[in-house]
Image (cartoon, rainbow, N blue to C red; front, side):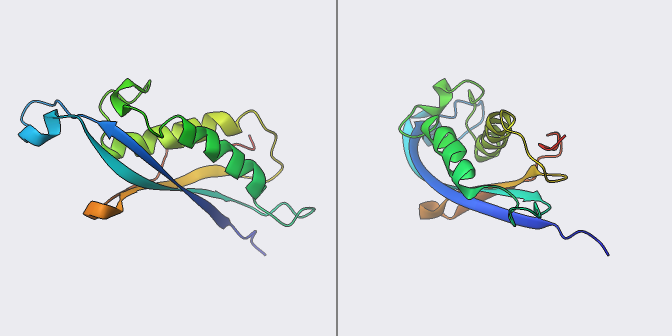
Length: 140
């Protein structure tokens, strides 16, 4: 019998400003402007038999609160690691920051990892889905 793999996710929102002064961009990208973002972080792993869960959702909520705090009502260009705050770079930053914060905890389940990060600007219909391939399993 194979071990089932589960995906557990939580969503948070944040508001932030940025500018994208990249040569060749449209003029409005050079101006400081803001967006409302929705971010979903999905964890993947096996269920811990003694607890019946993949990850303590309270722990996940606490970690994502700290991730959100690093982005909410900030100038994203000034956040370390986000000098060019595209949707792709924001998604990668969220994945790496979530991973780093979770590394401070011990996990019993095999192959627990940050599986997917989705960053959306729903008011303008834009979405980026990131599947990190370079982050180690958290249970390792």
